[in-house]
Image 1 (cartoon, rainbow, N blue to C red):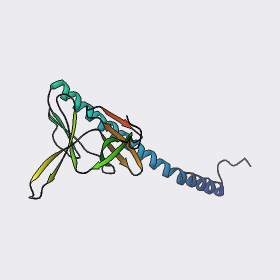
Image 2: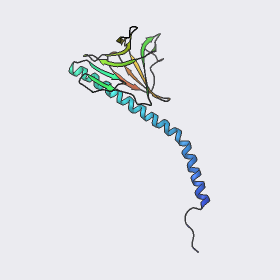
Image 3: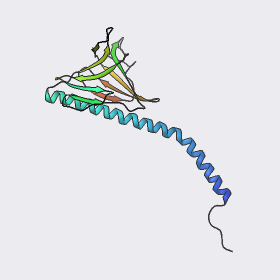
Image 4: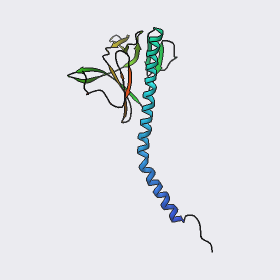
Length: 177
């Protein structure tokens, strides 16, 4: 009789069990990897939108408005950008206090405007005491936008002059001059 080839039933069951254990161990880190990739993609996409808006404002000498978390028809003066359903966006104004950056959360931000000279301005819409729609500009000494998905975060910083940068670290609490 010749040699038998292949697995016996017990060898096959042990192999499948070991494979299942390895898969269960790898699954959580794969989820973190997916979340990180999604936040990185969204951050870069948002950065590109902001840079394009600033570039258009400077090049065409027009005020360009980026409507945040809204959908609409893109025009020469209006761009739209919204976070994915699993992500959140938090705005903080940054102020240099006692040689450290201190961030203060700003609620309701729905527009970022780049003026003809490339400077940036945040604004938010709300209803006043009489129920009238009102728009308020947010003083911009610097803004840090936190884009997050679960515990994965990226930070987008916009200076008053409109410079946009993406980082994995927050600027809050770090030294300033």
